[in-house]
Length: 287
Ligand code: AMP
Image (tube, rainbow, N blue to C red; front, side, top):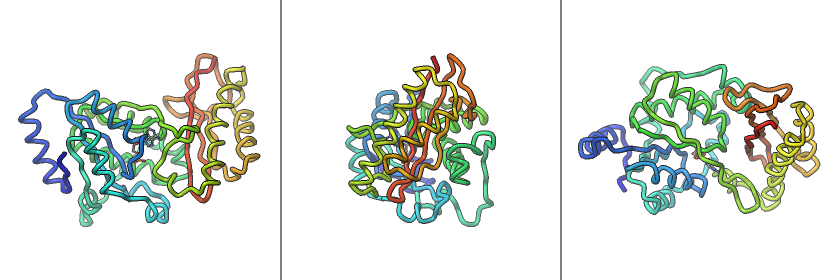
């Protein structure tokens, strides 16, 4: 595995790889590091589908709306390097912030307001725009054939799919299932900040989503009622800072009022426990 720190080295390395591997498939897996089995599932899927895998590891300051969250974001480059090597990654791109955002360059902004002004974007102003910007830069620089994203960050996945289609990046986006702990908690780099007790409370997130799925399968069609049920379950179990529960269409993330038979929907939520913000979601098809 080759570790690359600068854009110049990245361009040179990929040019060489392309000269020697004409027609071969290159996959990109963008991450912010502190890798866990959720990330590793993306690496495995990429390894399976592509001839070469490039992992980017960059804690992107532009996607943090909370400076404290950025400051506290966990980093372990040594362990990440080992995990990537073990996963058969070919290139590990670990740029400095200055490399991705040169101080003297004019500021570029990318937005798809119809999709960023909702769900996560509503509660984390600027976050989705930061994600769009870094992904667009990585796609333009690396020109991968495939890029892998987790469904845990569902809005991110939908946005990136639209970004690729709106800017005609010649690239296929692959969405991967959420990897969970044995007890159902969606894995996240931020989980290391949770106490034993908070980890226990956090299990209610998945349980509530499963109950909402069951309610929908049993015929509940009113989104407000579903949100109320979800909130009650979480709040009765010590998760008393439910930021939102959303019942939305899956392709455009439009908030729904009533569910229609056959509709593909996404039920998602953001919850605070121990001061850590956790998100999760479930895909449901309305019967
Ligand atoms: P992050 O390092 O948090 O920016 O995540 C990098 C990629 O890994 C994103 O596409 C995430 O959606 C994905 N990811 C994070 N956690 C999980 C998980 N538990 N299961 C599947 N994918 C995940």
